[in-house]
Image (cartoon, rainbow, N blue to C red; front, top):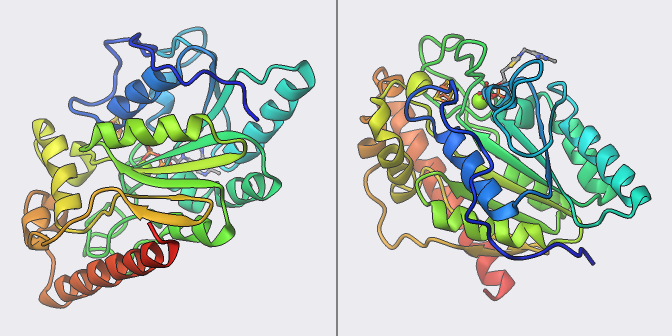
Length: 295
Ligand SMILES: Cc1ncc(C[n+]2csc(CCOP(=O)(O)OP(=O)(O)O)c2C)c(N)n1
Ligand code: SF4
Ligand SMILES: [Mg+2]
């Protein structure tokens, strides 16, 4: 079993004054994550906005060891580092992949799934801003149906790929979704992931004012509205047992979420209906899994 401390550190292990955009949810997630994990952590970031934190040459924003992998291989690097640490007898160190949605649900999925299948102990946090932001707002598999991106100028024509559900089917020991809008829920989930003797995966909904086209000061409001309308559901699965961590008795109309963002300004009635069906089906699926889990 892992011999890592459960204590939460008050210290900030990410520098201030970084060059992310104003109101960046990704930076907030990274900062909170390290407050929980503490200094005995090695971070891996692929090319993405998270690479802004890792920096270039001898300059980095992290106050812990960090390493820039390539985009397709975060899972493979994390496995290799973990095995190396085991050889050295260093079981007190967390290995963390911190990657965007494009690097996770599309380009790095094979390496991630392989590392999970092999059972290596590492924490993978996907901050999901629903597009390839760092290279100019191209759509990813995680982009919501109907959303404008530079490669879907008329709105994305298919539903988002639900990688959390895929990994649930794969049988990962700990899996959770989270949101930058509910930071304590995210912190609790990182705290759980910290003690898992195997792989854990946390998928964090992370609005991006630049790519979603809303004012920077509304990041948290947009994130919370996604949860309150059912566009994003907060849950966790321990050894496959599902628990919805923020239950919604009555969803707000999804239009309230969509109209906060210019990326949805061209949405049609048909797409709106498809989104409503997607919300209902997604929540029902999780409720059923929760009931079967006896949670
Ligand atoms: C194999 C490969 N394909 C494409 C790129 C170019 N690239 C660099 S960063 C990036 C965007 C990554 O998007 P995401 O993972 O969602 O992170 P974000 O930029 O949104 O933070 C892309 C496509 C690359 N580095 N490697
Ligand atoms: S483009 Fe989005 S995710 Fe990237 S730094 Fe700016 S706000 Fe953050
Ligand atoms: Mg992204």
